[in-house]
Amino acid sequence: MNVERLRILAELADRGTVAAVADAMSMTPSAVSQQLKLLAREAGVRLLEPDGRRLRLTDAGRALVLRTDEVLAALARATAEMDRYRASPRGRVRVALFPRPVPRSCCPGY
Image 1 (tube, helix red, strand yellow):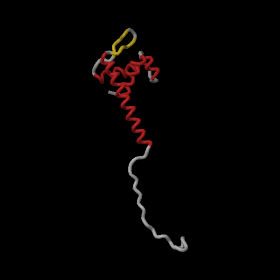
Image 2: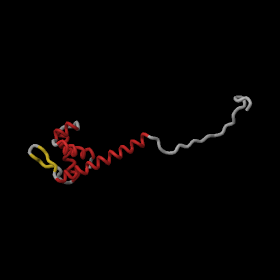
Image 3: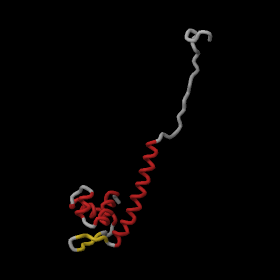
Image 4: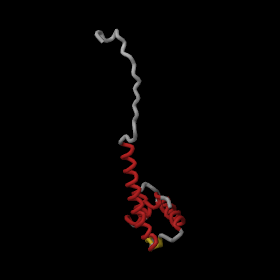
């Protein structure tokens, strides 16, 4: 399942309307509806049902929203961990030196 589509579903659960989700995510209501239809197709179950002029989550939709919260939290943790790796150098650094005789002309009394 597509993570962005899962985010849209979670936004719908929070905001209640396709129009509110569209505003919040800088999308058109039509694009939100299309993404939700694709998510339902990916999930293989009906996630939404009409409720007057609105959409309501089915039991499967509510269950998926709960899992979506877990998935998004796990992705946030993974991203933060990768950010820490990018921010601090890791690994081994090897330095090799080759002895070189010091010329006598540069250091009197040597």
